[in-house]
Image 1 (cartoon, helix red, strand yellow):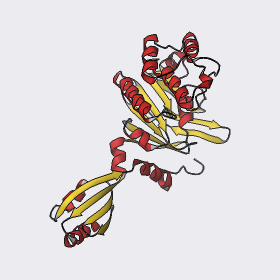
Image 2: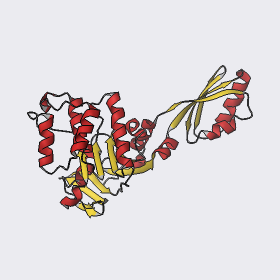
Image 3: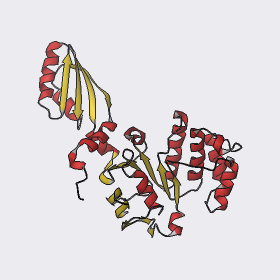
Image 4: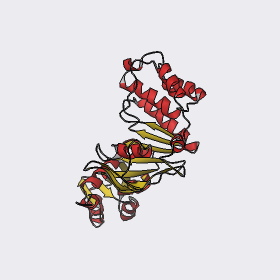
Length: 298
């Protein structure tokens, strides 16, 4: 998509968004509710009509029905006919030109443990989401647009969902996953596009985002004297906040951790271990830093 703007009256859905989604990769779409994620996905499907810009799907305009036939979509607000059984729903979807592969439907139904005999309206949210996943992945589409796809899934099924995504990517599909939580994308996405108030503020690989994240490091020294020496060395490093107690130093590091190891190489250190880094904090930085705020009047 190039320079795409969608307005709802005077309210901004998305504005001047340009984004490419490579085949064989997972692109995460990240932002809180109201940031424009769903609008962007719906614009690709021509479900909402941009006032500005253009969108191509596999080199063809998204306004062409043949282009949209290459796309599978799982909406975040999945609404299914409650009176139909899962089996009847899948049959209706196929008859309407949904392009479902019958063999794939059978395989996915078994893998996800979908009960197709029950009316969809009697299913729990998680089980309705399973039906949605069957509809999305049984199409063997070249582009998958998945809006908050793990909503309602238990951890075991989230693992199965991840396997389905990897299989689609290995088959050459371009996959877009939207989420409002960075940690949901960390293990799946190759790169992440961050939306803020309808504007695209960053597109970075997971490795680039990890480099931004504040890492937590625990350093154990041989004694209090070594602790003081290590703390003094760390104090000279930008982006490092260290707190010492006896023979332990807890440090928070922004950027590369290798420089910590180099700085402590000549000191009496017993161990250096990572105690975690929070990619979700990176998202908060994008939303608290005024450099990324949409300018008034733009």
